[in-house]
Image 1 (cartoon, rainbow, N blue to C red):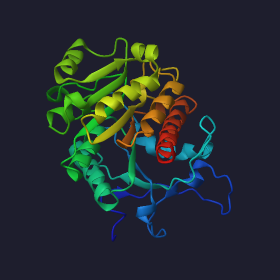
Image 2 (image 1 turned 30 degrees about the horizontal axis):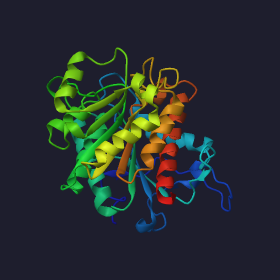
Image 3 (image 1 turned 30 degrees about the vertical axis):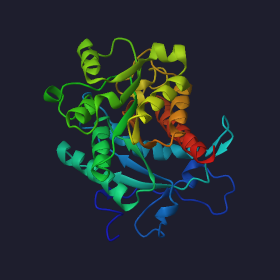
Image 4 (image 1 turned 90 degrees about the vertical axis):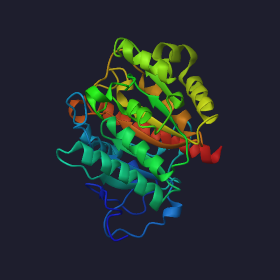
Length: 332
C-alpha cells in the first residue's frame, strides 16, 4: 500500500523499544505496532487489529477520552499476556496495532466520516482480522458499526452493550454525540432495536422517556441488579443466544462508565452502583468466546480524570480479558 496503511490512519504515536529473545514478553513487547517502513505484514496470519479512535469533542460532558488510546498503549508495559485465571497464554495470537484514525480539530462530522471509512478500509484490506477499537467517546460506536455495515451490506448486526446508560437521547437535541449512538444506529436503519442488548443499567441515571423509547424499539436490557442476581456470565450467554437467532454479526461495545465509580473514576459519567471490575472482565471474556462476536470497542475513558491509572488499567484488563475469550473460542 502506498499510504499508511490506508489514508484514514496515522501510525501509532510511539513504538516501544523491544529487546530480542525475550522468553516471557510484556504486553507492549507482544503486540506489534505497525509503522511506516516496518516489515511486511502477512495479513492472513493476523488475528486481531487494534485501532485507536481519539475523539472526544462529541462528548456531552467535557472529556479527554481522545487521550485513551495513547494512555492504554503506555499502560501495556504493566501487563503480561498470560491470564492466570484461565491458564491462557495469549502470545500465540498475532495482534497488530494499526495506529489512530485521523481526526479533525473542530469538525466532528469530518471526524465521524473518517471513523466509518477507517472501519470500511479495515474490512476490505484485511477482512479476516478481528477489529478492536480503543476510543474515544461513545459516538464512535455508531460510526464503526456503520463502517462495518458498509463493508457487509447484507449482514444483520446485533449490539451487545455494557453500559450504565441507554445512549438513546434524541438526535434532534443532541446530534451524533456520545449520548446517542444506539439511537443513531436504529434511526439510520443500520440496526434493528430488537437486535440490541444493554447490560449494566442501574439507578438514577436514565430518564424514563429513554426507557419508554427502548421499550418501543424492542431493545432488550438487563439492569445491574438483575444481572447480579442471575450472574453476569449467564446474562451474557442469554443475550448472545438470543442475538444469534437473528443476526450475522454481534458487535460488543463497552462503555467504561458501566463500572462503579469506585472502580472507574476516570470514566466521565461513572456512577455509584455499577459493575465491579471482576464482573466486567467475566462478561467480556464470555463475549470473546462466541464466534458470532466479530468486532468490539472500549469507550468513554478519560485518563486526565483517572486516579492512579485505575480506569486505564481496567480498560487494558478489559481488552486482555476479551482476548482471553477470543483465544478460547479458537481452542475450545
